[in-house]
Amino acid sequence: MPFVPDSVETTIRELLVDVLGVAPATVAAMTDDTPLFGALPELDSMAVAGLLTEMEDRLEIMIDDDDIDGELFESFGSLVAFAKSKVRE
Image 1 (cartoon, helix red, strand yellow):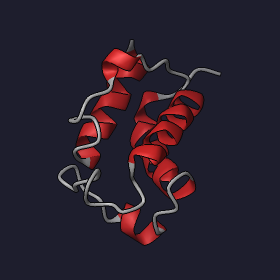
Image 2 (cartoon, one colour):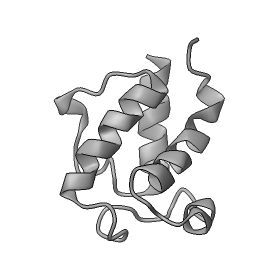
Image 3 (cartoon, helix red, strand yellow):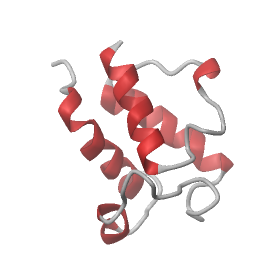
Image 4 (cartoon, helix red, strand yellow):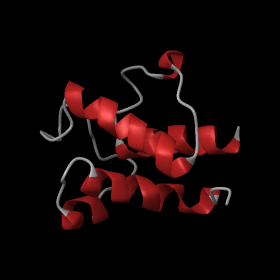
């Protein structure tokens, strides 16, 4: 079953809870401007790999090494925007 793009943000929120162990209330309160990398202690360099793998699995996308840069995890909004762009490809 193809992934439904409208649920990308919900999936990213679920990933932050499931993969990183961030409290559901914290994730629910995130806005586009909420900083991630450097602001969330759970999101370290090791956690990034697990998060990207789960994004690929749950969103049915492929993430190339060239896609990954510092801005990707800068904020919740940048991560959701990236995921949406990959789902639409």
